[in-house]
Length: 436
Image (cartoon, helix red, strand yellow):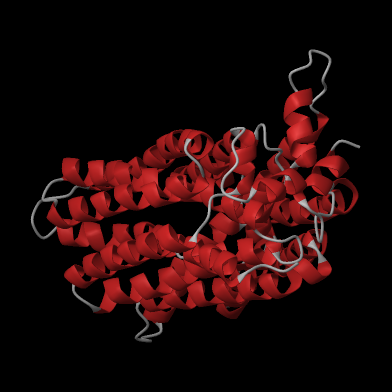
């Protein structure tokens, strides 16, 4: 039948919310720098401010997850702009660590709400022929937003950052309010019909509704959502073992290397380049995901990561066992470039795609909220607190590199044999496949 221009416009408007998420994620560097001009900020205060974000995200997934279930996907996405604008105003007016921390918590609410409601909304309102591409747009819009706001923060006044943030939020709210329709799956779950969408609801969610009814029987075995949870757990673990946190440290190593070589390359410029590389990976994924499938993109991503991890791990082992080995900065730089692209060709975006596809209507919002919380909170603490201790516990960076490489190889085999292919399948057909 094909999607209408209005449906595509609503999804594009929804994806623009990822620009707001990007502005929040990139605010810390410039916001704290501005705060330091009006008050003294110690290192532990900076840690408190940074930690408030995942706390807010955790709470946001719960609050907006319930909102998604009770009031609908559309209203939930619109509501995230209210908390977003509130946080931006607080950031702009804040002159103390306490006020900024409150703003971080409120901003985290928005992030949690968007990451829960948006993949659900796109998954339920897009056709199976292009669903993967449309959910991948979340990553594309996020990196576009990261590039834009990183440039604004680095090269313009802080007021411009605030003005751009609020302008994006207002434009989204107006566009989404008038263009977007509520997901038909929400009406089915709430036993409602809306205008003349009732036929579409019955057609789209026949198996989903049957699932909800069957789940009330005492002998029902929920194999479908158990498989979904296991698949998402597998992808979450593989993502954390992909070496992604090592890359964060290597980005700053590259900055120090160019600085020592008297090359005038600012850290903001390096981060913008890294966002461009990640954007390239997302674009490649968007072009391939509905043609070659989720399994292909995942396996290509992980096998590619293993291939680029191998020489870095081997060189690290050589430097540990032999003296006077000349460092090869080009090796680390090449690895970082390849990792940033390859991770976003499959492993990173497919997690969002599966959040919008795998879970049945009965458990969807709760399951997505749990996994978004897990991904954001674990990602934050792994990056800033746990990764150095993790490497130290293994004994050396060489062991961690070989662990990452082995995880990608084992993960690609697991994906091939365990994962179901959701390409070109309706949400009903995915549920049938999961229950086999």
